[in-house]
Length: 267
Image (cartoon, rainbow, N blue to C red):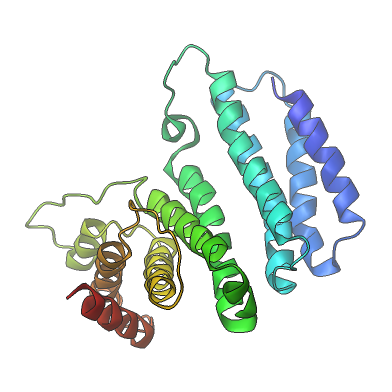
């Protein structure tokens, strides 16, 4: 069913393993074992095949994602490496459609489940956030050299993180629910720490975008309303960390600073 894809992924993982730092090899070994397990499985269902392939690809791409961050997104290779990671992750969707031809408009979430679909968008969005954060902190000359390119990377990150946060809609919980804290989180669409982090990342990307528009001449995408988007997610983040998650040590200082800036810009 996906023998060719798993065989190719297994081959690539073994090649990459030879030049991968020791501390990152366990994840590659996990990819190798997943591929071998699938290739030895008799007649997996299309859904099982898609889910196993998605998990293997996400483990595989995580290696280079980590290396890009460790290497501060090298000028001569960051674009191509990010594009390669995105292509690998997007290839999961192509596999889902090919293995479910009877469903003309197959929904990814129906085949892979919400957690995997969220992970696909999260990993791409978080990678764009890490790129933008690295440039903001380590190499602002790149922004001066090509502010339009930086704007497009921020827009991409905002879009991907929003997609991740919208895979599952906020739940309407019974008003007399005894689990008040859980109810609050579900109403905000927060199902995990990753959702909370995605809200903070989105807010910070929106802040950088607003600053970029203020300090440089760029052609912003009309669909990106950074003030509205940033304010919404920062407010939701603060509601969660000041409320149900107040004892878990999440910081509010940076979120409050960003929110204050965006609200002043919007007024």
